[in-house]
Picture (cartoon, rainbow, N blue to C red):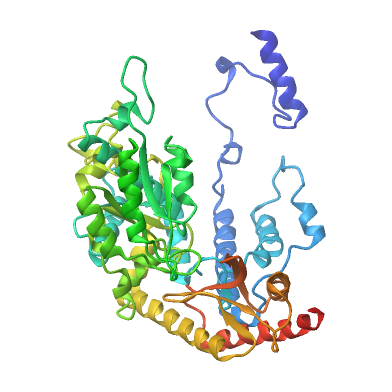
Length: 532
């Protein structure tokens, strides 16, 4: 024992963690310190120290607001320089350099080299921009630092209130809900709840038995669930994480508009049951990641009711179309879902991380995640009154205060303003589509029913085969991104490479759409002479 302790102390001395400190037994440690400066804390230890931190905090805030106020004059994205890249391989600091120097590292080495998703010409993937008020709200949430496992505290009440508001706005009044990190976790929580709830209806205890066969017991029939070939990649991950296996996710063909083929789905369910499988859930997508298509949610709701299956809607960005009078009809049928997942850090413009899952049957949600650990037992009075509400409705116990920024933005602007931003984005997308279909050098590659546009540059007069056009557009996209003028992303549709504009940007103006088109045409014309 003594030898091991000596080796540990020697090792710590070697890495510099206990310089000037000899090993002391617990009994020899003096219980008092000679001065406040000797105490280990991350707080400033003097009034002057607090004043310096306050001044630094004001500078940080000013710098961030200054940066956001001039975004339109800056490049969307720029690569991290080679010398700076090398600095990220440095060993971790043993001794500190002070808060001001640490902030200067952030200001010069991190702030200028983000992905650019706060810029008005960022159209990549489906990443929201954040808002200035939500940025400040995140600071307040971090400063208050509440533990959102539950407890009798105002932050928990804020989260429950925001969940209730969105449940009403999305057509599921009375639903239970939970804020999580992103759409993947929101969807996985819903699928886990679906599996446990449907299993209970069938007399199976999925929480106790999982998806396994136990010795001496009949092997349970495998659970399977369904979604279109356009379903986001979370579904396969969920099948693997939940122990169902990737083949438990049954992919269904789509039609010409990239919506799930409902008749094919019905045929698959019937065949799977005949083969001894147990269907338990159907995923309908509100806003597919590739093209923004929305499945026929009404037809899926009818099918699930007839087949007694859980109906889940992955509405990562598309669910919030319900807030816009212009496009809310596209998500008709979502109000009949058993669960809905959506991200407020996408079309809700909130900073990461901010997603939500809603479950219509509040008791089923609770039963799926109920936890009875004695150290988390609720009290009749005091801070534990009400128990660990959120811990008993999701996987996490320790959770941050994600809902504050949403709560403050809604109080500041109202949900109608969220709807106006969504309407504005759809109108801008329709304008972009109009430009594409009327221009001889641009080609629309898929319908654009919501807020995603897939297109490519096609030289006029057309020459070169499909492979050549793919190569041209791949190079065009990278050059466009590296130029910093605009940042769309890409996908492949029907074997054709597409430039993909995913528009959830509250800062975009019509001139930003025009700048994107002009940059695509200019770069395409520079590249197209090499085709032949």
